[in-house]
Length: 128
Image 1 (tube, rainbow, N blue to C red):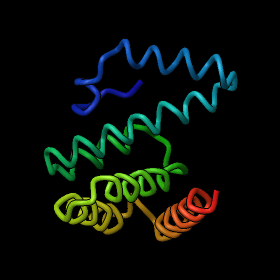
Image 2: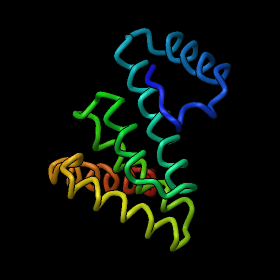
Image 3: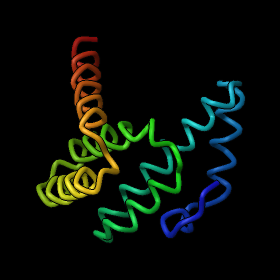
Image 4: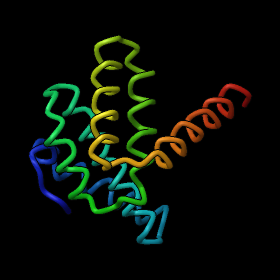
């Protein structure tokens, strides 16, 4: 488990519950790692929205050591902005993603994959 400023506020009991749930329903360890990575990415984004510290967000993302999964951070950021529906969150998240792309933490392929992923999931849920 990576440690950074964002993860210190997380209750360890919640992390253990998620781990047990993941192991029970998804016995593959890779799926557990994906769930934990998604949870850490969501925490990272929520903390970024409260602090506005781009460098800390980048450092924590790099500490996750899942660069092939960075498109999910973009997807989660888009969903978080849509759920919050306020302009301040949208502006902050846009600034973070632009900064991450400028320092090449995010590639254009990852941004495209995330936006396509968001579009298809949104269409799937609205049609279902």
